[in-house]
Image (cartoon, rainbow, N blue to C red):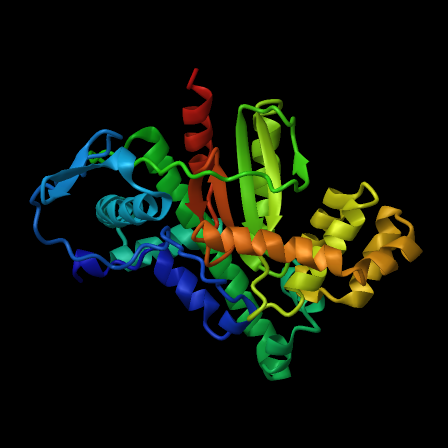
Length: 367
C-alpha cells in the first residue's frame, strides 16, 4: 500500500467525532494541528517570506511601502498569508515524518502494513478509564444533541468520540516530541506576529498588573475549546509566576451559544463581589449546562451574596460591559473563540502551551 495513504492522527480524530459533531461545535476555530493528507511530490525549496519590520513590500507609483507602515488589519492579513506558507511546509514535514515513523515500526515489528503499525501504536496509548463513558453521558444528559441520538447508540458514539480525543492527544504528543527534539525542523523563517494595540479593557486578571507579558484572552463561556484551554492558561501563569498576567475579556458567540451572554454577565456579577475567577472557572467546568439555575447554584458555592447577585444579573450595565468587550474584539479582527494576544501578538484557536511559551520567551528576552 502507498506510503502516502498512511492514516495519521487527524483521520483518527475525525473518525471519532462522527455522529457527535453537533455536541462539540468548533466555534469557528482554525485547527491547524489537524494535518491533512499531503501528497509527496515536488521537492523544490520554498523561499522564505521577508519578515523584517523594515522590509519593503513593493511600491505604487513613486511610493514605496514598508512593513512597518502597515496598519493593524493589513499587517494581520499579510501575517496570516505568510503563516499559511510556513504551516504548509511544517505539515509536509510532519506527514513525511509520520509516514516514516510507522513504516519503521511496521518493519521492526514485522507487521503487515503501516496502517496496522499505527493501529497498534494508538491502541497501546489510548486506554479510557473505567466509567469514563458513563461519566460523560451523565454530565451531558441535558444536551439536546445527545438526546437526539437513540438511547442504544449513545454509549458507542460517545466511546468513539472519547477514544478519538485520546488519539488526538497521543498524536499531538508524538509530533510535539519530534519538534522539540529537532527531529522535525522547518527551515523557513517563521513569520512574526504583528503587534496590535490591545488593552485589558479594565477587565479581571490573574498575575501582577505590571507583569512584563500580558495575555489578553477573548473567549466565550459556552465554547468547549475555551473550556479546554483553562488548564493550559493556569499552567502558563504558574510557570511564569510574576512575569505573566492573564486578562479575560468576553466575546460571546450569541448566534450559536444562547447562554454565552448571560454566563458572561454572571461572571462579572461575581466579580463585583470579588469572586470573578471563582465563577469563571466554575462556569467553564460546567459549560455543558449553563443557565439561570446553574448561576444561582454556583453563586451559593463560591459564597457571594445571593440577593446582590440576582439584582446584578438584571442590571443592563453588566450586559453593556460584556458587549463592549465583544465590539472591541471585532475591531481587532476576532471572529471566533478562543483568541489570544500576547503583548499584542495574536494567537487564535486552541493553542498549545508551546505556542504560548514561544511568544512569552520572546517577549521576556526583550530589554
